[in-house]
Length: 137
Image (cartoon, rainbow, N blue to C red; front, side, top):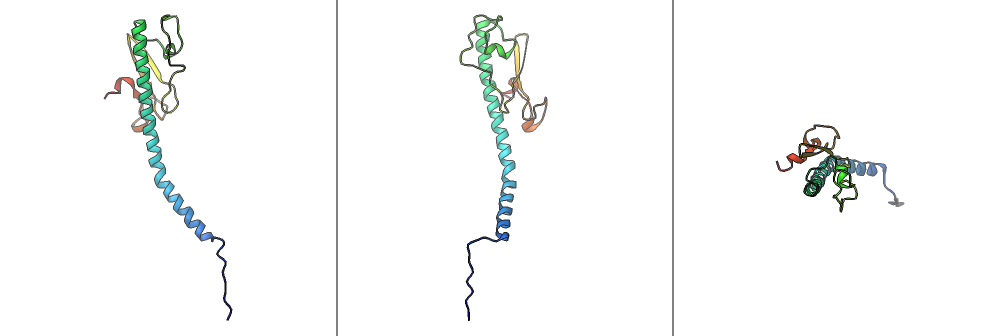
């Protein structure tokens, strides 16, 4: 009687398909959680950057007696306030999604807005706008 010796050097197609199915299932379960955490991190980053801008605007207001008409005046001295020295800001911070903040100033007050992950006005949930006048709420 002859013994049949099988070589176990390779893997079968079935084994490869099972591994791929397991990896696909894990990816399908974990990807939405990761995306949600990424959006939450972007929101926190946006609020921190917005706080830095608000602090810089307060410094500008102390130095110049009024809020700047645009955020660009925080990084480049302008005719509006010749005494202003930009300091540590070399360029304006952006929100967590790498978009510029929207700045509105009138009657001595200002609002800084991030349009959120959808980059459009409005939105709900993680795509909602983040406004400086609503940060403490």
